[in-house]
Picture 1 (cartoon, rainbow, N blue to C red):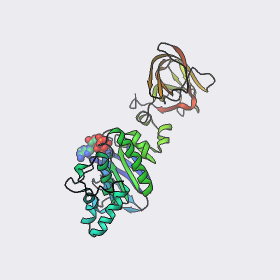
Picture 2: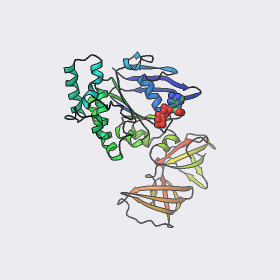
Picture 3: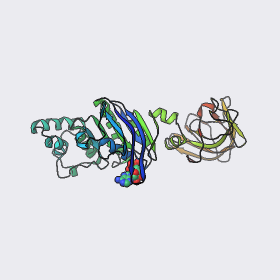
Length: 355
Ligand SMILES: Nc1ncnc2c1ncn2[C@@H]1O[C@H](COP(=O)(O)OP(=O)(O)OP(=O)(O)O)[C@@H](O)[C@H]1O
């Protein structure tokens, strides 16, 4: 195959438009995460790709062939669901090779493939166990091995880690990513967990209310958010409402400096986002806007220190690695905070976006 393309895909459930005009390219061998809050349409989009749900409009192409109307079982797509959907009364081996056996593969070939796949997911020796005798992580590996049995052209996973506890989830994210890279299989993962998406994906598709908000690498999505929704949903950010004034932004009495003039007409309402690790506390000589501030709270979270401030332009949280700046800040202390020019992201303000 080469690449999977979605063109103008949308889906209506009665009067609800669950997915709106999605155009996406999934490159061969890449792992893409569909990321967004509950109800944003990511599962519906994945189910349309799988052939489990028919789009209301638009087309899906795989390697140049239009597969929009092709039944799910005719697409060579492997799927792993949230609850793994394993057969509890079958053994691990039987679960993995089940699809091969019913599609007519000889028993000996199916068993050989089963052993190879169990080895791949580090479960060799577990073939004769029942599903009920496995841990959550082992069940997930069986589900992955089963999905890979048909040598799928595309591998689809819907919240594959949600049944696992936090520690195991992190380990499995790394394991799954390494396996996917080794096999070079085009993979799409639905998740609402930004860390999961950042750990595993070459490319993240951020969705909200049925629409694609941004597509990019984990770095791009974090450092160059294209709108206030993405800046708010991915990582943390301080937000301020302002108005464009002579290429700078007025927020209350302060005039904030930008790296390049705001690309909006004077008088336009804008929203500014600033990641908490970008401002400088009590520092001179940084190109940016230096504001008066008072410390309102200090919080140590392991190696990271959060300083909460009340500033001239409103409340703000500044975060830095402890040890990096070994100055003490106490509640009620007066200080300054500098917002560096490259740390400010400016978006149009329509009244709809993140507060
Ligand atoms: N079969 C259905 N019938 C009617 N409405 C549906 C159906 N499936 C999904 N929806 C609606 O479509 C929208 C998108 O749902 P979808 O399950 O795709 O979201 P999601 O991003 O995967 O959410 P979650 O993370 O909660 O699973 C929601 O408003 C949902 O209520």
